[in-house]
Image (cartoon, rainbow, N blue to C red; front, side):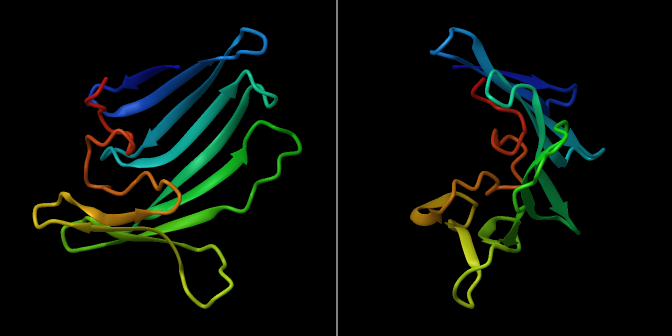
Length: 163
């Protein structure tokens, strides 16, 4: 697997390509991810372009990020944009509950549950200076955006220091 990340002049991630060798016929199969940002650099939408699968050349809207006075959460979508008879799976919205420092303490979903309780996606406790407490976090579905104020987080689409 190869990964190529493209940054803009401000050092913010704008595109990423992940390439896998297809073992069945020897061709490369890859996914290009594009990050659309507002003038302040906040991620507004994430698009994916897939090649080498049964849905060859599919361009999809994967995520829409929600903002108010700050980041509120994101809507996970799988909306195919270039397919004639595309049907969208039910979008799921994740709302981030933050503390006064901007750390995401909990993430809840708008998915319907059998009980009269919110669907909890992620819970995290932090030490006084923002480090995650070991053994005090829980993540049901690998929610990627736990630290929205961290511009260097590779999952947030910022500068990936490991590359």
